[in-house]
Image 1: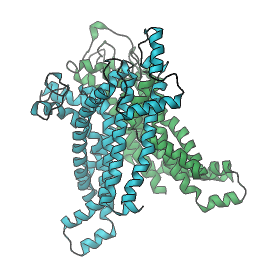
Image 2: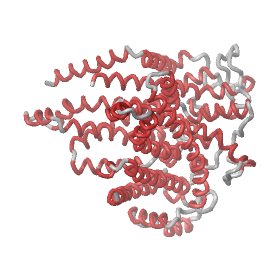
Image 3: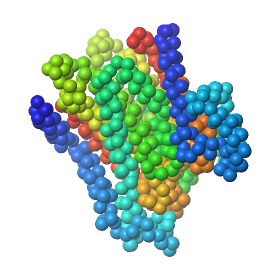
Image 4: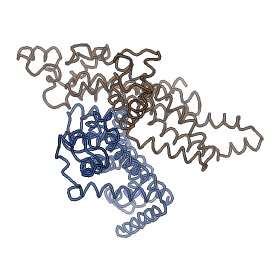
Length: 317
Length: 287
């Protein structure tokens, strides 16, 4: 187990480095001089020259990457062009709001996905199965930004049950776990949970249906074990795969929330990215992408480490 | 040798097509898609009015108005015409990136899988890095850095799908390469290129094709999503995602019209997914 964790950690390091490299290169993907991403276009020539030295842009590319990485590791992601504030501070506030939204949406999606998938898999071919399959096709096909609009129309415009915009009363960006803030969370979370719901329902249904046909389940049943005990065996065997899929989905939610956040004006990373893109604020774009992807890498690592705790055979592979 | 391979290849796809005919859901989806594609392709001849003609006095006419069957948008443009024209770019966003990624991804995957060894490992480990990016985030990052524009979003989407298709093509190629008949072909003096073309390609294209059809709806939702964010198609060009965005101001006055472009994306993407499911099961039965 120790060596397994070590191997996973060692494997994650080059991936994390690759992510930093791609985030770094995003600046060079942007049209024009990378300095445009740092200095306003009407800056005087001596300022630009000074900035060039200050940011190390006069050095060769690999060295620039090294310097940038060194600063990034220390938590310095540069300064936002638009607001002049440190990127790291701006991104962290936004990441917190995104994590609240993605976390709640993920929890709802994973819980109901497992429930629906297990029921559909158990009563394979029944009406529950048909409903679950239908829902999962809808879940993976619906453009969630549109679903958000439709929910807003129904529950904010027509029924006036939930607020349509923002994360709290008076457009506050600070998240609190109270009633006023929770009301703002309902619609975006329901919108976002549809994505993992569809895929997890589909996965669990296939797994459970497959598992119930296995010989060990038939043997357990032949020995007269109750449904509850059989459920325990099936759950333990499906858990690693469900966990892996759930982890991936949770990560996708952090990225996928960009569109939903735009619909609901949720003050998270999506909102930050969107403003950054249209103000050509490349340091903020770069910092947000980097931090979100690091979360994703860490999440995958955690899933990899938890999996053999459920099924020890995985550590031996 | 090669002509025989071609005949057997044709019969395989014929069997798949034959299987597909017995799946009513897939068949219905294919018909629906055909209808949507035809409406988009022949929009210039079919559309009742000019999709760019604005009219300040006819803004946000409700659905079922005498002159405008599906009403008008926030600038008084005919919705039915705009939806038909809008399908052109939205469907292009669904099909083009997947097609390009299919060609590039399966080439890289075939190469990596066939060569094997260290080169394969290096290519696959490099692609693993792209897996560390959630796909929406990668698409937004690339097209955000490149700046708004349809070509940029097409490029970004293609780049998002390539690693996934490489992985599928590589894993199948690696499995096939170890089979005895490949060894036999090599012993009979066949060159690598002809082994890949005649003996490997046919086995690999099927699974990659199935995977790619599953990506069509993802690509369209993502592509329209980029336009929805303002990163893709620019106004006044009609495109479903962009129309959805500009109509957001109308959700209080004419909610049904505001929801229409999204409903088109939804219906098309369901049809893509159901067809992909049908193709998948049709090809599985053969194997």
